[in-house]
Image (cartoon, rainbow, N blue to C red):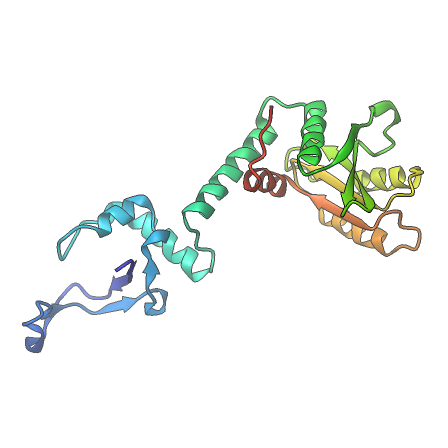
Length: 239
């Protein structure tokens, strides 16, 4: 009742099966079932396609929905099918990322945004470090763990476009900041950007984590898409 099948017609000419007259399906065409003849839940279809599926007749015009149907088949075959909530989150993430990259925001505003996100996630003593003394660390905050210990998060924030991607130079800046840092609190290092990261920067992070003199317990790279998704999924409000 809440699922449907999709097939493609292989031949225009219909054939006749006398034994199927009683159930009004005597005239048939050769078809090929798609999605391995597995049903697809109506909840995954677009609103327009769901509406058309409610038509109370044997044949219903749907040529205007070919793109919707093909997209649904592709998502199903690739295992990327989305329900309404997932589709909404994906769209909101896309729009949030666009605004992060192209909206009315400068590097200082971006640092303030990241500082607010840290506070919203429970960070204490969140601080944006003046550029003249930051030494690679733009923002820092402390988090209490079960009220008995602390972890510190230090962030290098980069308000970038996707191209060129954030490179090794930025990673090295944060590493130098960690080396000049005098805190004895276990530290998680992060680079957060509205852009993307180069393969070289990701490789450098992994190399640094293997060094004996590594000054952090974790080192994460958060790109623009991940940041936007984080904001959408957690309902972050910007004031």
